[in-house]
Amino acid sequence: MSESIAVISEEIVDEFDMFEDWMDKYDYIISLGKELPLIDEEYKVDDNLIKGCQSRVWLHAEFKDGTVQFTADSDAIITKGIIALMIRALSGQKPEDIINADLTFVDQIGLKEHLSPTRANGLVSMIKQMKFYALAFQSKTA
Image: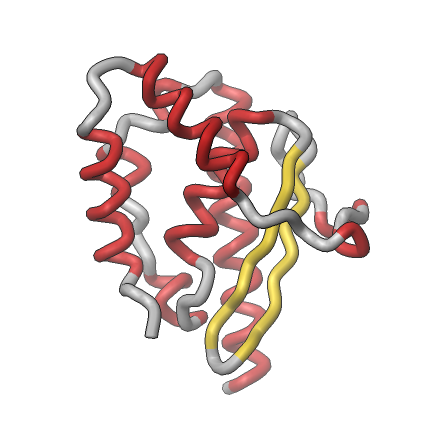
């Protein structure tokens, strides 16, 4: 059984608290992106691009064993790290947990305020798309 979104969020906040400045945090975000398991090439299609992101971000979702499994990729290194963070928090969770997740860690680590406006909008689009997938899977099982 995977950890809850709240527990994962606390871990992320703790990890970001270890860094004193945002250059180190950016480096950490980039390293998370490098560790992101690659999305299958077959899913890197226009239909899986997240709209509203300046960079190209492909997001694929599957419903397995009652949970939503996300995979993603991006052509920009920081964006790839950001989607890696979101996948860590939301992948493997039940649809209703994803839909109801408040994702306060995004504000707690200061991510939104340290991103350019276009990246911040992209982050909002990522979260919306992940919740949209969860909603779609939930409605199929209801």
